[in-house]
Every structure is written in C-alpha cells, then in structure tokens.
Length: 636
Image (cartoon, rainbow, N blue to C red; front, side, top):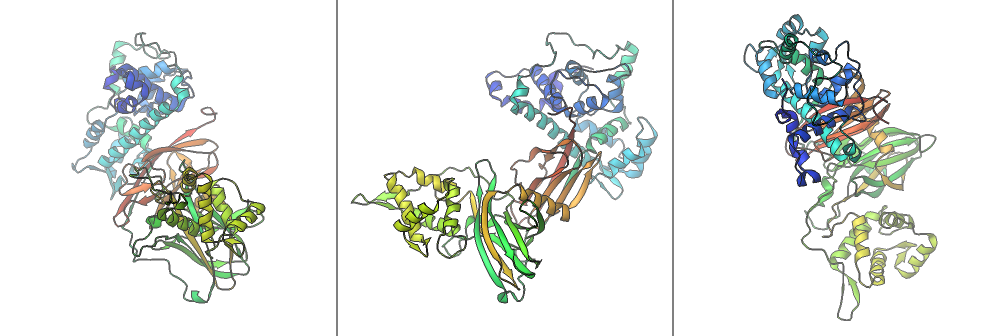
C-alpha cells in the first residue's frame, strides 16, 4: 500500500522546478526532501502554517486535492472516522504516502470499460444507468454536473478522452501553483515541517484506530476502483473538475476588408477637434497614458475615434507600433470626478482605427484611453550598437546628431497635443512630468521663452531642439541625462520607440464644437479598471462556476480581442487559478500561460485580455479557471 516518495508521479513531475532553486543547485534535494516539500506546498495552500490541524472532512478533501489526489468519499471516510477530531501535518504526509495520485492512463482505462462502441465517448443514458444504480452511487445532480460540462459533451455523448486531458491539465496546474507559491514565499520556506521527524517510523494517523488485518485488506482494495466499476474514480474526478470552468472560443482570421466602423455620411459638415497622447510602458509592466476631459455644450450626434499615431517619414513604411490596440472609454461626469458613469467605448474597428458613433447629451465627459497590454509589452533584445546623440566638430563645438534630431522631432510631434506645431506650457509640462517628475513653473517658462525660439508664447520645434542641445552642453557632452529622457519616452539604445505607443483622438459633433483638454497622465487603472469591468458585465457572457454560485466569469468577445472579468459576490477573498496552455495563436496581457489572481470580496476585476499573435490566422482561446475560496480563517 505505502509507496516510496519517488513513485509519487504527480509530485515527482515537479522536480525540475525544485532543482532550479539556488539551494538545490548546490545541494540537490533527496527524494524524501522532495516529497516533504510537496506535502508542505499543498498543506500551506490551505492553512497558514504546517502547525495548523485539519479539523474537518472538507479541509482534508481540499488539502488532498491540492496535493494532486483524487479522493472519493470512501477514501475520505477511511481517514476521517466518527472518532476523528483532527489530523496534523504528519498525518497528512502519511495519507499521501498511501494514496497514489490518479494517472491519466488509469482514468482512461476506467472510462474505457464503459465505452461500448470503443469510440472515445460514452452515451449519457449509459452514464446515468451505471453511475446512479451500482457501487458508490452518484446522485442525478452529480451526473448532471458531468454531462453538462462544456467542451466534453456533444450529441448526447460524453467525450471521456477530452475530459481526462482537461482534468489532468487542471490538476497539474493546481500542483504547480502550490509549489511556486512555496518557492517564492521566503516566510513559508522558513517554516518548520510541522512536528515531522524524519527518523520516526511510519505510523497511521493517530486519530484513526488501527484496523484488523482483515479490515486492512478490505480497505486497501477500496483504495482503487474494481475492474469494470469506475464509479468511485469518476465521482471523485467529477467533484474535482466540476468546480473549474473552461472556455473554448474559436476566432477566425481578422480581415481588414470587413470593417464595421464607418464614418457618418454628413461628417464633413460636422465640427471637429483632436488631441494626441501616448501610452508609456513602465518598468513594472504598468501602462500609463494621458487622460482627457471633453465638453459637449448641446445634445449632438458624436463620432469619436482613437488610433496609433504614425510618425514614420518613409513612404510605405508605417511605424511598428501601429499594431498596438487602442480603445477609448467615455465616462459621464455627474456630480464629481469620483462619480463617473460609463457611457460607451470605441468597440467598432476599421484597420487600426477604433471608433464609436452615437448621441451624447450636454455635459462633461472623461475620455480614458486604454490598450490591453497584449501588444505593448517589454521587449528584451540585444542592441548591437548604442546610437550616438552628440558630436563635436573641428572647432570643438557640440552638435546633435542627425539621428538624435530626428528622434527629438518625433518626440515633439507626440507632446504637441493639439498639433499646432508649438508647445504650450501645459503641453511641455506633460513632457517634464514624464521625464523629470517635476513641472516647469511660470518663471522658468519665461526664462525659456527668452533663451529659445518661441512663437505666440509657445516653444517652437527649433526651440525644443536648442533646449536639448543646451542640456548636452551643460553636461559637457555627457549624454547620460539625454538617455534618461529618451528611456522615459519609450526609446531604447538604438533610438527605437519600443516601450510607448503615441495615439491621436478625433471628435466630431453635428450640433456644436466639442472641447477636449488633457488633464492627467497616470496609470491605466482605477476608473479605467471599473470602466472595463462595467463594459464586460454589460456586453459579455456570464458563466457561474459550479459549486461557487457567487463567483461569476464574464467573457467579452470582440473580433480583435477577448476580455474576461471575475465577479466575486461572496464575503470572502477568492484565488482563481488560470491556465491558457491549450490556447492556439494567442497572447495575453499577463505574459504567462499559467497564473493565479486574488479577487477581493464583493468586487470585480479584470482577469486577462487575449489577442491573436498573428491576425491573419485562426486563433483559439482555451482557458481553464479553478477557484479557491478562502474564509477569514485562512488569511489575515
């Protein structure tokens, strides 16, 4: 019955992760150490400390699930008898030695015994007869939980091959997440292994009375399904898998010819304003951008668009960031900035342009630009040669290089928000806040106007060039401060714009001239997160996770992207494990195929955005989500 730690297939598959730790590179872990490391990883996913006790069947069931086991009710009853009051960490380890994880081969073999046609599927009618009549009987509701699982049932048949694959993927994800949590948490790594003493001989869990040899033989046989009877295994598998939710969305290749966004017929007669802005990628992966206020003085039909700004001067060679997705959320200001109501967002598309057409009443609106982060992301690539920014001529006079002047001209184009070819103090201060963190006051701006070329009290393009040349002269040609500015604006050492995406917003109205003003440059969170969640809840499909009626996954499908939002209606925090490994031709904004998110009580949050890697090819979004509800007893 007892198995060696090395024979634990599910846990042993995690050796590669363990072997990558700094300690294990110097001192390779033994099989015994790996076994106990995995035991602790599972235990500490449920409890704060390995010194805490298991005090209920439900806790035992949850801990065994995190350890990759597939416990049936008989298995739980075997270790939690009417006389059991609690189990400790040592008891848990002993149970794991005895209870082998279910392998994919074992599951398939069990299911195959019910496959009368040998076609990889089982008729629902046969499942109902077999699972509700004999052996460890399942209720009709439990069988319903199996036959209603998405993606594994069709035409009255249960696809057990796909079911096994999904189950094993979910199980492996759970194991991997628990181990990674232990690896990164230094506090958990320092905790002792409960009361475990390695040299102590193996014993049965103390609260369980020792069975007689005859009883032990019977119990051992119950640990595995009998030939021809898969009810015990299937019941436990269903109980585990039905608490996850999976999505499969097949998207066709995106065609620029089939555009949904069209301009109003009379738009040439409408009044128009525009403003530029930029998304900037921070070191931690967060994205910040300009945010705007728009004023509409009377009820009008309005046409709004947002698109990446093409700065390329070469004909037929567009800027590389034109593939970055851009969306504009329009929020109505009621009594205060804190009370903003989502009105609409630019969900229609024509090539790189996203837009919206509709009627807006008079008032103040906030325009919050957004990009998913699927395309605008950090790129780590070697730079063959650092660009030269300045040089000296024969006389020793300092000049800006042609490449640097071209880059500065592009930067000027981006920060000239109204596009009039001049920089106002307000426009220049957005640049200063981005590059130095400080504003230029009126006195400093007056000095700037006296020393550099201006027009109508605004800085010209040449004046902006001379200002940067002055900075280089102040540092005697040392370009380090210039590089700080360039990096802040999203440029790499080769003067390529890789961590920013400039954009332009156009607003047309038929009854009045709209007004737009940039008021902030800040992180794309807060109000934006609320707006995204609200839009997905309004337009997306909702799916309640079985067994967690207060946890809802909302999924919004667009031709260009897919967004999922978690809604937690419960009074407890929930951790949701997400697995995208089976998706095809997809990229998500988190940059990971497997991750976990925490959703606060009574809240909503964006889980992920997903886009195609190659828009010209079909892409398949396949995601498995497994929740873990934490009560106040399990977290601070």
